[in-house]
Amino acid sequence: MKKKYYLEVKKLYNKGFYISALSLRGRNKENAEITLAEGLNVISGASDTGKTFIFECINYVFGGSTKPKNIIESNGYTEILIEITTYDERVFTLKRNLTDGKMFKYDCGLKEIYKQAPIEIGNQHNKDDENNYSSFLLSLSGATYKNVVKNKSGHTTSFSFRDFVHISMLHEKKIIESASPIYSEGSRFTKTRSESVFRTIMTGKDDSAFEENKKSDTEKLRAKAKIDVLEDMIVSTRLQIEELTSELKSVNFNIEDFEKSISDLKVQLSEKKQTINLLESKKQQYWDTLQILKSDKMLLNEIKSRFNLLKKNYESDLERLAFIEEAEYYLGQLIDVKCPICNSDFISEVPELNQAVAAEIDKIRFQLYDLNETIKETEQKIVVKENEIQQINNEIKKIDTILEEELKPILGKFNEKIDELILLRDKYKEREFHVEKLTQLQKERDYFKKIVENNNTTLTVNNDINENSIKLFCNIIKKLLEEWKIEEHITVEFDHDKKDIIVNGKAKGSFGKGYAAVLNSAFVIGILQYTIMLGLPHPKVIVLDSPLTTFKGKDKSTSSDEFVINDEVKQAFFKYLSTQKSGMQFIILDNAIPPKEVIPKIKYYYFTKNESLGRYGFIPLQK
Image (cartoon, rainbow, N blue to C red):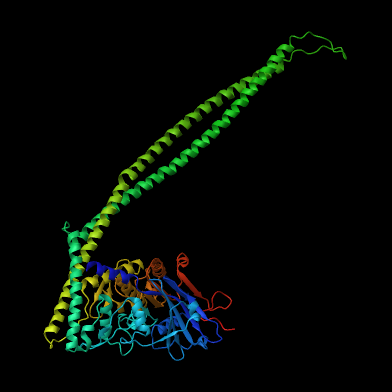
């Protein structure tokens, strides 16, 4: 039973799809096309370049009743095609005519549709006939939901793919509304129905039991079948609780103790990191000093080399002068003779030369003595520098020893302990979640037992979601808003009456349209991440029109109510979504431009509205 349950959950992780291409076509018209990818896709640029038109095209193919606005550029185009790729690697193409609204399906990609005839499918949901766009897309999403309650009397209506669209695609008007994103437009989407859809998506359980509130033999059979399913789920849930209890049997903490222990360890970890940073800083200072000392030593060695070269020159000069003295001596031994020309005596002695040579020798010897002293002094300085270098190296080695043998291993142990506690805490939370889930399942089983036992049982509508699920959902949104840097400190609560989030103690309407756009974006993305985390059905496509264009943050330079555009939030928004690549797709249509470092990591289009610069817009400029 337990293995079967986990296999079913694993299957859901492979469910869902992403839009891989969008094409607008018409007879004798150049195709207007964009390709998209898993992860983040951003289409930005000037106004009136087709960004909102792209949203309307996707919405229309996904069953919207309103055609895309008839803009001048779209004249002559007659059909919209969307290629979708599933996460189990299948490719389909959906086509919808702009003329008559008919829909068609191809079991292939956009480039291969010419190879096969299209299959016409219904453009309205019909739970009794699966040959329609809604049943097809619900199947790809892993959703087997049939009915949701539409009024407080317990009457039901079909769950359709449009119910997913309303909480995953926000157009430029809806995204700034102060009401919860779960409340859809249109008269047929009542408050009770919208809340029932939200509960179904968040719990994975539809309202088939409320089928027209009839107590008949057929309903008894359905109730019995439902009891069988619930009994299986109860057994599976109990097994999970027992497994988690076994894993936690040596743990005597409650959730508050876990949080406190994790917080205390993080404080200690922070202190150790500060110590490491201080030592690293000190090591850097030593390193800088070491480079200066080495430079000084190199300079002294260069000076010493030049002094030794000068010393050799002095010694060479002394040898030359000694040779002159010796030559003068031998010259004095020669016999006096007469000059054969003028008959005068040769001068054999030059006293002035002897004196000059002697004086020069004394001078060079004095300079050589002074030079030798200077060389000795330089050598002593070199020894001093070498000792200082050795001392600095010893200090650096001491710091390295402390870092590598003491602090960093402790840091690793702290991280391991924190990870261990977080894992245990999450298991503790998971057990609490399953305990509450078990209680709900048992109540639901008992409820259906009453239906079987008593034909007059009155059904009541309750669209509340259990508190553990709400806490998980709020934590997901809190992390999103923290990643997007919308405020320095974030708290997120859930208003059960309005079915919306409360941020830092304030309702969404207190923040204005810009904040509403970001909070609504966080709400629908939070639903996606929540369903993925719990293995619940979801198409896994989010389309947002202008989530950032109207966003403004508080001007920190003033305490007034004036606001300025906060680029930090916009950059953080794009940076975070660019990291979410596996098993989900985001299509952002906005005037805001992603940071330069994000653009290479995502699928990005920039419409210029300038025929001579880049791409003009979604629809090619007709020539």
